[in-house]
Length: 630
Image (cartoon, rainbow, N blue to C red; front, top):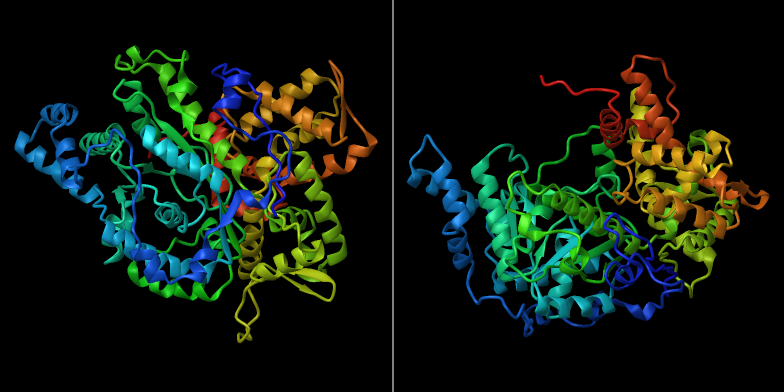
């Protein structure tokens, strides 16, 4: 059984969607309840009982979109090349003959396009089934969401939008859809995957289409890509899957959405070329991420290994490890037509310059999808333990060890707080709590180890080496272990961010006045808008939510004008304030560094390249610094 708490959205958005619309269309949770395990099915259970070959070769009979043409991939490419838009762009290209530009466009399309074939889907199904059974104990899928997706695919073009934490994400959705006879999606992927010998072509024939990472001002490439995506959506020939965050999150927390692909997939609706488009947010949660150590090293500046077939085979040692369970939560399908009804005027979309309100709409929808992904994510016991471990002094973790009894007691306290804060918690109900936490620590043996009633941070090193570590090597090893721990803490942050910001505002301002706290809350919300996901235009709703959650758990008393801290709430407020303190310390330290002041390093998180990037983005947004062209 899974402990899970969902709340029903009654919040108003920047688009003034009313309560009825939110409950019908935008589900950011539902009424308080513990989720029954029957909602989730372990799809690996059946895979372990039958042969992989029989699974791959069984009858596959999906029900596609009723308006989709029965054309081939070559028909799709022909439609793109002969589209009025692409012919117009080709005619505008000066300095080269039309035929030469047309050939260049054809070459771009050949490099980019998928070549989906059922035979290769079967091959991937056979291979992925074997790999997943080695990597994971279980893969849980919510059947209610999957059934709604199956129905939605038959009624309108569907856009599948998973969060992105691992390379495994690229395989899991197609694996599930193949298992349940749902049309296989075409998937936006980075061009480096296409260069992998043999593997790249298998991925292309399994539905991947490949996009260059650096497009810049290449107008022809943009035109081919956008027309290719729009044609897929317009015809509904297959569900389209892409990561609205743009790339794999190296910190395991949500990334501010990128709007390029989002704009492309929505354009057929804004232009009136389709009646509706359905967006399906998908939340993928891992007990343990396959790339956990690589992600930490990347954050510390170690170059990311190049995607290659050789590298893939070298990485096969991960098959010897246990990565626990995965949960794939298919969210309720969202109707773009219903979300935008009465909010935008599609007849003005083709005006030049482009109608700004529609751009704001795209940005709002993208943030809404990522926020919905967060709400659908399941928080593991390890994420709660990571939150607590990181609040201990680093010397305690590396030298003295943290008392096991105290950690487990505090974890159970935090479990209750998560449920009070409407989080979805993956906690086995039929297993004793002590066993749950012991097995969780054992699963994450690469980060911590439990010995003689204490928990210690693991710092990788060469046991055969007799040479003492240099200070720099010592810092790097400790930082890598800490950043792995940070990544798992980040999986729970979305539950605590809003009340945490309010707790921080209370701690810093020492004020009880609601208007003063709201002003500082908005300031911190703006500063951290690259760190956490905030739906545009919802500052007052976020503040009200934070107040409500703190009042619900007994931390504060609310009146019309004041927020009063209660004695019973000091523990909650202290935990929340400490949870966000590393972000405050990192921003303060980096701010001192930029302005050439001295500052002490209070957290290893300041060494993360993502944190540094986000601090610079915040300073630029607040106009504290300016970026100069080289």
